[in-house]
Length: 230
Image 1 (cartoon, rainbow, N blue to C red):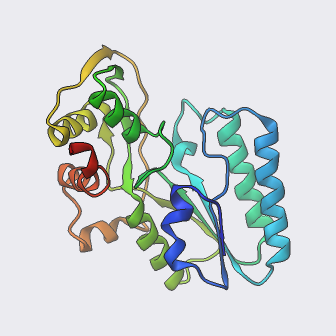
Image 2: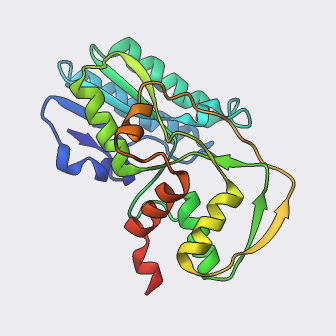
């Protein structure tokens, strides 16, 4: 069973299983403050767990929990509260904290969508030069989660992210090379960076020869943004 219609939910469509709930219908906007949106997710989580007591409950949370600039936000507090509910009420669960997943479509305001559209539209990008982000191909998220399930890594929280972060400037430079177009930047001495510990998944990238950061992001762009070159 797949709950949700966004990037993560759609990535799991071909892997739907009767004995597993993939819950990807949560609040995704890290700036969200509307209590009604938080309550909607909470009610749906409780209802889904109650109605599917014998199924593995896979919940997609966020690595923003480790971001010191957001760890007091309503969004992060909500995600932590949902994790607690799942750990308390679900008989078998897997909580997956994901970094910035990149794939086909998705919210136009996600980082890569925003940067690609801004560069192509010759818009000035206010660039926080001290910021970094962890980017991961949504198809790698799927493969990693399926491996965790196969290995019965249940009743725990696992960080699913790439081996290391990219600086915002590095991301922009790789996109510039891909689009063959220079970005219009306003450089600001600002931004946050935080590390993500991934002991449970780092071997996935090594065994699939995905350690080269620049090649990894370039490959993601070629996979999902090739139509932007036409």
